[in-house]
Picture 1 (cartoon, rainbow, N blue to C red):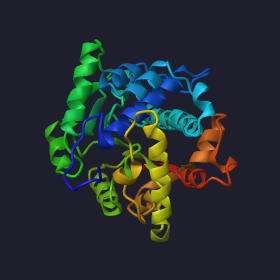
Picture 2: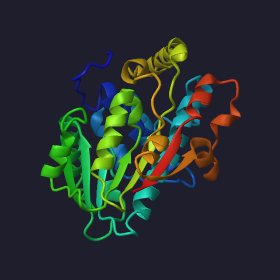
Picture 3: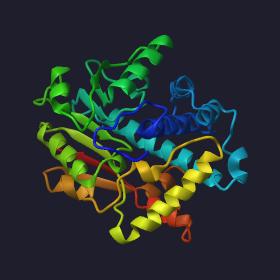
Picture 4: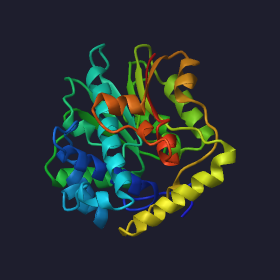
Length: 311
């Protein structure tokens, strides 16, 4: 179902199902030989959602190597590798960030992110997780049933990012006068281009000197390429349906030209560094997208960038 202005979701539908997909990929990546990441909560969270294919992938009943004979398998392998590298990038961001004295973190659109539980946060750290109320409550309840305890002062903020999330964040105790570590992982493609700009403007306005930000920058799609991009997404959706997964990205993401987040942040006073996804993958010995010059999807995903900024 296509997005609407005030749509909501749980973790088995719409945008929420993509969070479950990402957690399943993190679970699979955590089992890989020489794993880049270790997310012990990804599998039980996915299992609690109950989407069969993702549950079997997360639990190891379906292995990426065994799926490699199917046309979709390369997509699953790419997904798993990319989630491993992406997760490591944001893990390292939060691990490195406390050194300058940042003790306040905000995870935007947290989904099934478990960093508040699994990272080694310095004493006194406060982590704010923002997401839709049903997503926040599901994760809280599931992790509590597992007996998991946060490794920081975790303060969930149950609010849609399209609503007045700064007010809700402040009400939860956020201090805009203190330096903050912000993350926006796998978020921007699900926002209209103008909403991406508004979010970055708000983050900037709430960031005291010394703040840090890390974002995944989705590629901009020229209007002339919209139809082709939608066709490719629809073809991928058909492949997913063979596994019983109803996940049509063409109905979930917003296409169109959007500002480059690195440039946008730099213009607003952030000292920015950027890393191409292929450079990130290559640094960890994983297959890159630039090895598939005849694959339009690979070329588009190869434009992903991982951006850090310091205020």
